Image (cartoon, rainbow, N blue to C red; front, side, top):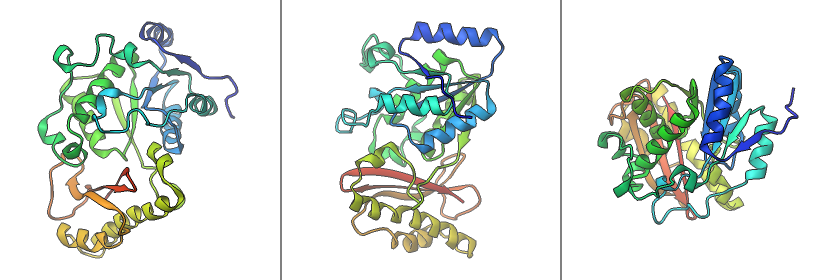
Length: 288
């Protein structure tokens, strides 16, 4: 049954902690879905999984400035608070935590005067981390802050951001954070394009070109099933399916658990890709 009670929004830390204490006093299992808003069906799938597993579901909506570089799209990142609230209400979310940057970083965001989480260099210096220097410092820091504020039992992350997922899992393990990380499958549009908030930037023509990303990823899996395990050969053949207007940032294969690069495709290999199309950066991946 669709929820008809409008989901409440809280924008300050003290109040959200008070509400969470009420849930804790009732021994409720709390599920948490951290987002940057501009919610789509991919986010809805995370919320649905949390609803299935937990008594209470909290969604955060926070466009985190510390994970954006100086030339990235922080200012124009899509924001749709009213639409997000409607989606959360429809999905039965109990509370939305939507703080301002000043609430999350009251002392400012200068790392010279701020304790930041810095994941190991080995996990950062590949895939998206090669071009987005410092990005995962910002991601890890804000996720840990949100975990400390929400104190969830389970937190839900999509596998589309595969490197982020691996880094968050490692942070939780290394720092003994008492939360279960629940990976959730990539949700795709009917044409195969992975759901992303940045898809809103795509023109109709760009979107048609972007569909070739998933075609190339599927080709990698088909080649492996047919007996091809050479990463070099598989990428060479699959890359030919990408639309010629796509600017490839990376198209690489790693072990999904360790992010070790591999030259032979095997079970649990992560095939990951990032491209720019008409100025829009898209990422996608597929697990063998």
